[in-house]
Image 1 (cartoon, rainbow, N blue to C red):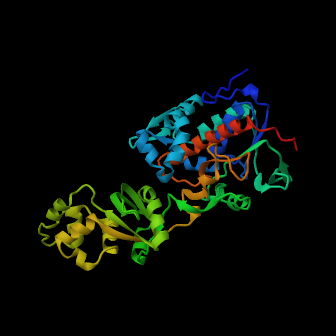
Image 2 (image 1 turned 180 degrees about the vertical axis):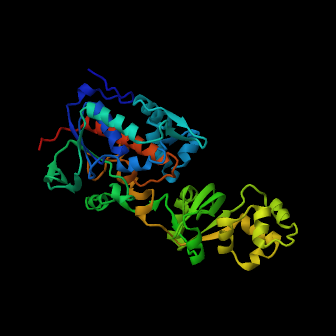
Image 3 (image 1 turned 45 degrees about the horizontal axis):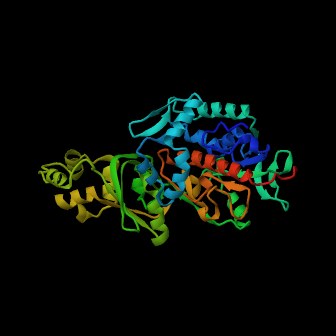
Amino acid sequence: MCASPIGWLTLPVADLPRRRVAVVGAGPTGLMAAEVLSAAGMHVEVFDAMPSVARKFLLAGRGGLNLTHAEAPDRFLSRYGSRRTEISRWLAEFGPQQLRDWTRELGIDTFVGSSGRVFPQEMKAAPLLRAWLHRLRGAGVMFHARHRWLGWDADGALRFVAPAGDLKVGADATVLALGGGSWARLGSDGAWLPLLAARGVKVQALRPANCGFNAAWSEYLRQRFAGTPVKNVGASFVARDGSVKKQEGEFLVTQHGVEGNLIYALSAPLRDCIEATGSAMLYLDLAPGRKLQRLTDDLSRPRGRDSLSNHLRRRAGIDGVKAALLHECSAAPDLATPARLAAIIKSLPLPLISPRPLDEAISSAGGVEFAALDDNLMLHALPGTFCAGEMLDWEAPTGGYLLTACFASGRAAARGVLRWLGQAQPVAPR
């Protein structure tokens, strides 16, 4: 009896007949599932609608592939909000350190940046993906590009539309790793949601996550400062539950509003507030390095012949886009005295109207409800069908948290498949 090479898998491989498993979706989640299943002796075929695999993964890695984060485990888990309990089960088997160990096995070393984010040494996704695909193909994994999944036929076979025409595929188990609803041009279009809903699977509508927001800019600000980064700034927001969310960093003024890492980090509570009340108020600290009293004292110094603009630049370091935002989001009385001016610099109200469209978001919230799944990520309504990755109803900020949980969920779903196949009878070949 030969044990599986996957260390945490206790099910003996020899006890399982060779089964056919279909993985639908060739992003990191689906590829991880394929790796675990092929290592356990399964016949694995991966189907994807796009001409090549992992397109969103490759694009995300062009500016530096942020694989995971090196912060303390409790802090890391807190990033998953209300889904912390469910995701902690995945990460217990394959967390940040296991992910780094895995990349090293592929010949890709990683390093921790100054912010705690973890990157491959070459920063790019392509070398890692090439090494990974080489290993998967060597393990016998078969890939089928340009195969768009259309659901099931009356006999339970998977339906695809492919270059050669319509195709039906029978499988002993299926892993759906179809992504969310953002970046449709790269394959994550959310077209799977009504297919599952029609089969009685409980789903939530897809919503933008890690997204930008619309603001009612004046034409002056839009023409002069769209595309300008706002650096060294703080932001705070009072969530609906009364908690105060704070973040420091930078963001970008756009034609429509704001986007960037600082905004993405607060996007979930901002989006939820807008959905509930119709708007959200974000407060900007344009001088996060100065205490209010110090700023008041500095602005109280005589202006002499200086204009207000020069006075702000010399005494508070406020100029350019920060000065434009100050005038855009305040009224004349707010600038009348040093004390009021200092207060508005430290807490400038920025009304946000709505999130940007789902397809512009980095990721999405919503999808398959956890209540629709058992502990092995198998759908209650469709035994033998497992779901993983961003198509599940969870979200996380950027910083490696999304990607880590996608990798881990793919492995968790594959482990669920192997447990289930240990009890199920093989299907007749089609």
